[in-house]
Amino acid sequence: MRIQLIRLLAAFLAGCIVMILHEFPKALLYNSLNKKQDPKKKKNIYKLYQYIDPIGILFCVTNQAGFSKPYMYRLKNRRSNLLLGICGFVSLFLVFAASVIIIKVQNNFSSLLEWNPGDGSIRLFFQFSLLYMALISITMFFVNLFPVSTFDMGLCIAAKSPSRYFSIIKNDYLIKVLLIFVVIFQLLTDISWYILTLIL
Image (cartoon, rainbow, N blue to C red; front, side, top):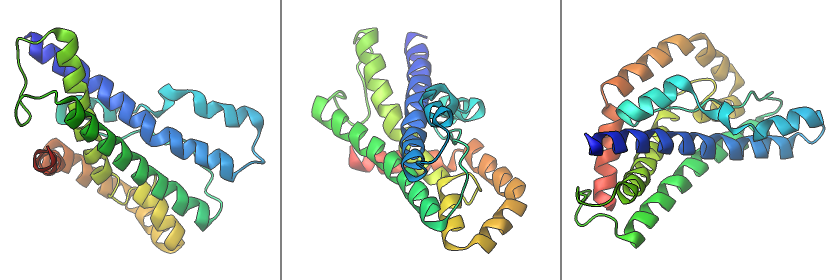
């Protein structure tokens, strides 16, 4: 029971951190690309809680495969769209890489993805938080490969082909249904676990 509670809290915290680290750099980049914005709107990006999607965090806790709530961008030109999309992918990859490096350096696990139940609650919470940050970030990377209009891939498509972007907007509902199906059945989570076990 103690381990389950620690894992639940660690997954929740990791999901929140990954969501913020995914969206906040994009919001900063958006501000730098749109310097003529209203100063009040520029300050809105620092409300970090706005990047935490309620449904996304639920999936992070239960399936380790969620999605963040994107900042409301005004997509003005292709270059900005492409940079924002790439920034999202890069930020998720960096979170994944940093988490894996810390796990390896700290040597938190005595063997491959195993833990010692006799460890203190704080140590276990730290271990699981790192593990879930790595897992959720790489899974969220895969989630953002889906051509949902507000996801990173959607931004990249908007940059390369506005006509295709409008077509994915029309099919947004079907794409999201497919995404939810994939998340619920843990297809992306299984792939991410496999990658993580190979690295660790």
